[in-house]
Length: 410
Image (cartoon, rainbow, N blue to C red; front, side, top):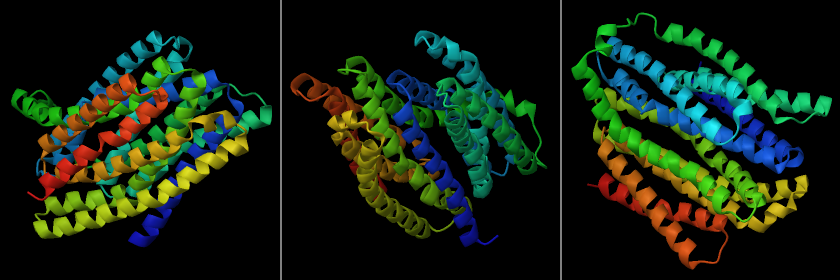
């Protein structure tokens, strides 16, 4: 299949995935109670965050060295072993989270959703690294989109709008995506041997952990930031409408990250990794990086304008005009996630160069600036807590981006 045709099909599948999130957001905004709306998005956010937290980013290290190393059997064995440890940790932490937040009635179905989500995300990462972007897109479509369409169709047909049905639909699609992914993972891993001795080799394991720790900390700091933000509003916000409006706007803003990943990162980043693994000249790598960066900046600018307009029109259409009181959040959150996309672009560059310490320092700077700005505004500003969090997110990426540029030109 030609690359142009592959990109078209890949983009089509990912657009369908994004569209499902738009449609689901519109549907829940219009029909779900505020409590159900916030419960769903907080649980989904927890699934995403815990999935990242439990991995310790060891999978990121093993998949990177799987491409660049000749010992593919060893790194594949390490990856599979730690994947199962990841799942175990995720399930334990998630059950504790649901118990603490009084969402025990969803504990069984959501635990199974998390189980399949962790596995399928790992499969999809390997598909992209092995230039099977289309397979990855289909897996994500099944896992993240079909469930939304099915829930909307069923609820509209029966006029029975219960959030539990959405969770059941997610579980069913997660099982299908897992079966689909296993088929292709067997094909990718054919010829590879599972070496259990590698997994129990103390020197290899310690070396792997040392490489994973800075990547894990830098990742978890950013993920924690985009988890704590809504918890701050939940605790300090004036009412549930403020939290619901923030979740609504940030769900729209996440379209920027998804679109950048679809149209740029999932194609350009693997090319950079393989070029680096094949000892390409550094000047050629820099040229490829700048092409990727220019694509990201252009895409962010276009999407910023579109999201600012569409998020407003959706509120008018769904008659949720009460959220318009916090409309400035849409402008700020879209800008912050646009900056985050550019931040990710530089992060990929230093990740490929194995300069994980640079990414760690940048992530610390993000959290540090966010904390200082947020606390300062909370102490001295009379603005709403959602405004304070939104402006803090925008501010948090400015200094790290300047640091990245300084290190890039050194």
